[in-house]
Length: 302
Image 1 (cartoon, rainbow, N blue to C red):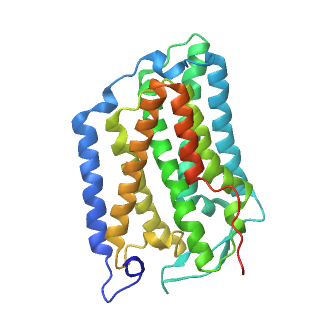
Image 2: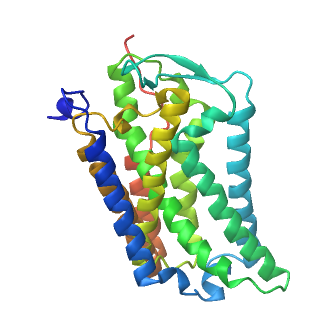
Image 3: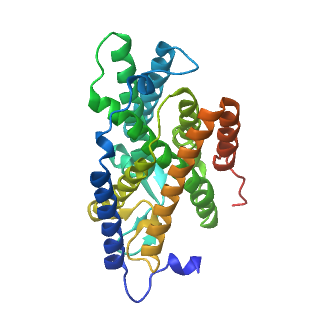
């Protein structure tokens, strides 16, 4: 069954995939505008303070995370060595090795989510520093900070899970080199993302509104649309399972949507349990991180 999903059949499924994606996007946008949760203004204290560290230390932590994102993505773009990958070429529908450099390396969802990571921490850091300096934090920033954080954390769990439980295994199955997946910046984006976000959910006083679940769905759908545009421009799908022509493309997209919703549910659960007990929160977050992260490169026999 799984093998059939990622194969090409007599008929391409791009129309069905497009319809399913468009339907999910429209429903999510309708939910966002109908419920109007992006008009609800969180309290200042929930955005700029922590129950466990000072406002200044919280601001420093947030700023450091934002800078980490900027440095990591800048390194990826400006590293003259580039990096190898094995994308799916659009025309012949086969994976081939290539060597990519420059801004095209930011086309992957991993980089998208880590850019969102930096934006999220950048917004929350700005809120903290404005408050510390005695200024008034704009209402739109108070609204954006927890929404961005929840979206980032859900997408991070998705990225880390897919890398650990699919991409690494698929790379070994196809006998591709694993080295690229364990460059320092890949480890940061695939593993330290959830570690730092786990620390943040303990330190933050953000309330993760259950209605935020629609936001990572929209973010994920925007990436699938971008993936199709990128395939037209660059001629490749970075993630072969996102090709809408596959037999099981509509099913695969629904599975990914389900994973991102489950990821959000996990984020909401972590917030609730951390609010109830910091010890229980730390233990639960640690167990989750151990389960989904892969810091050590697996050994291969090829």
